[in-house]
Image (tube, rainbow, N blue to C red; front, side, top):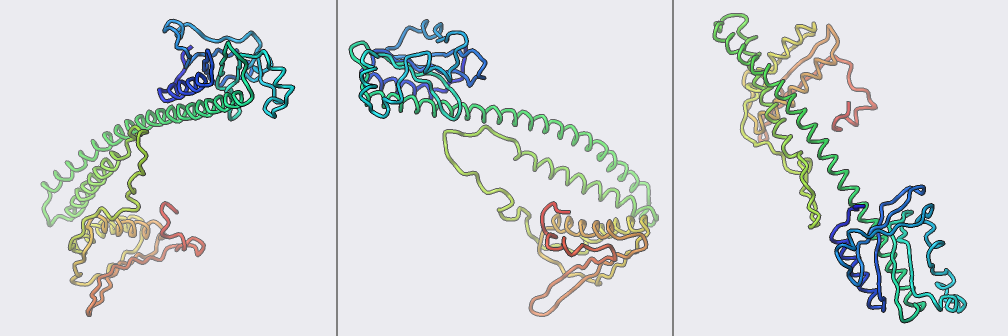
Length: 361
C-alpha cells in the first residue's frame, strides 16, 4: 500500500521516534493510514522505525488488524493506557506493572491517521513517560492531519490549474476564430476605400467600417495581453511572501498625453449617427468650432465616451433624443467638458448610489 508522505513528515516521525529512544524504548514505530470509512479494513504502513530495520522489511511490512477491527476501537483490542492512569491513580500504576508495550492511535480532528507503537524490555513505563508518549502521538496526529490537508489543497490547485488551462485553450480557439472574420472585414473595408472616391456618399460608411475593425483588433490585442498574467504558476511553499498589489490598487496604466477631443469624438459620433438613424432616435450635436486639447489617454477617453453614447442610445426609446454638447470654461483654470444627455428612461433613484459600482447594472 503506497501512501503520500512528505520528507518533512517523515523527518518529524524520525525525530519523535528518537525521543522515544531517549525515554528508553527498545523498539518504536509510527504507522500511518488514509482516513478510512468505518466499515473499511485498515492497513497501516510503517513510516519510521527504530532501531532502523532493513529496507526489505520496510517495503514488505504492513500492520494489518484482525478482520472486523476498526481503528476507532484500537484501544479495546490492543494494550491500552487506562484513563485512570492519566489521573495518576495508584491502582492504574499497579495494573500496568507488567505492561511494557504501548499502542496509541493517532487521533485528531475526528480522523484516525495511524498508530504509534513503542515497547521496552527491561522495565515498565511510568506515568510521566506515558504522558510524554501520549503527547508524541498527538503531535504526530496533528502533523499528519495538516499534511493531508496540504495534499488535498495541492490536488485542488492542480485540478484548478488543469481546468484553467482548458479554459485558456478554449479562449485561444475563440480568439482565433474571431480574428479570422475580423481580418476579412478589415480587408474588405480597405478594398472599398480603394474603389470609392472621397466624394462618394458611401465613403464615410467604408471609412467607419475600417475604423471600427481597427478598434476591434486593438481590443483583441489588449484582451490577449490581459490573459497572460492570469496563468496560474506553482505556489512557492518555501517562502512566505505577500503578493504584489493588483492593478485595481495600482496607478493607471494609461500614458497621459495631449489629445484632441475632436479627433476622439468624430468617429464615435459617426457611428452613433448611424445607430440613431436605424433606431429612429434624434441625435443633436452641439460642439464648439474648436475644442481645446486635453491631457489624458486617447484610448481610455474613447472607451468612456463610447460607453456613454452606447448607454444613451440603448436606453432611449424610439422617437427620443440624444444630445452631445461641449462645455468650456476659460480663465486661469481652463476646462473642456463633454455633456451627453438623452430623453431615455433614466436611472431609478434606488440605483443611483450604485452608478459607479463595477459590473452593477
